[in-house]
Image 1: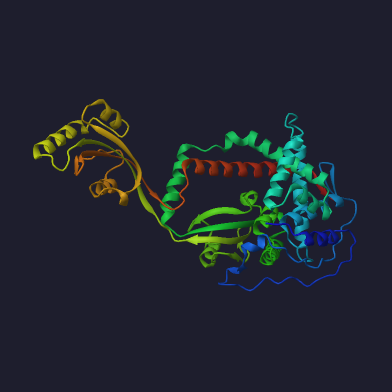
Image 2: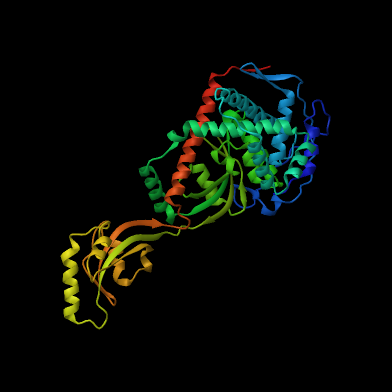
Length: 451
């Protein structure tokens, strides 16, 4: 994506307590590019293009202690450091309008970090070494397309203390490890849950689909409904002007997809709230939505791609065959047919290949999973209509006489995930939900006082 160094100096100036930088008028949200849902189009090339700095707004923080979390303090210095970090990582330009939103985001993050650190003290064996922190920083630098040295220099140039950043990262790694160790067994999903999800996904494969990025702002965490909507408008304006969507999502979004830069993957028509569906239908590839109000918060959607549904009918089949080539006599064909009829009631999908190898003159094969339209014409009707688990009557082809077993059938589509992928996705969703509940419980039990 490339780092935009020029903005960091401005950010640092904007966050110095008592600074008197020039004030600017609010940045207007661009007019819709196409359709009422669209705020504008994002240029993928902007991810690596340098941005000009926006003039900084006046911003003042009272010096000293701002908040106590179970008697541990958050100071104005801590808050400025976290705000600078959010600005650097998201590459949002600080303005008079969005600084309160950045401040709320930073303060929430600091409170949760203190709660996490306090909870982690109960687990003395959970120690994160410097090498793990170094690797995380290296991954961040790689994601920014720069060397570690240049990445750290960029942060230091903006007034961010690397020691503070390292402790933040150490806490994040330890918290992930704690959540994973504590809730991994509870997050597991059953085979039936995975199979049901797969069925729903494959049955929906014929419907329109949307590859989207999402940013979700929860109203309770962002100062109420109006403040959340206003903050979403500011983020939209910043992204239209060049702030990378993925970076903004990582720093501001409250959705589980924030860790993936807001990547929500392919979404099927009809599986999202009506307000989102209306926007998805209107947005074109490359467009960013206006803020979309839903119960409890506000969404911003980036339409990366969209496609019409394209379902295929897939079937799993096995066969036993007696070879009777084109030149076979009627008696030979009749004998092969009689032999297969005699064993038809004795075999199943699971046993037919073993039966074929145990008797001379029988050939067995697993046909795997195929698109029904790709099968031999003689097989297609059986593949479409026979019950799963059934064994067909003998079927004649130019190669011989066959018994066919229909061992599975499903609707498939482009990029239908595997069983393992769906299982991992569901487990990660459960883990994210349990982690959010964990931090909410810690927050509810904590004594948090604003000074």
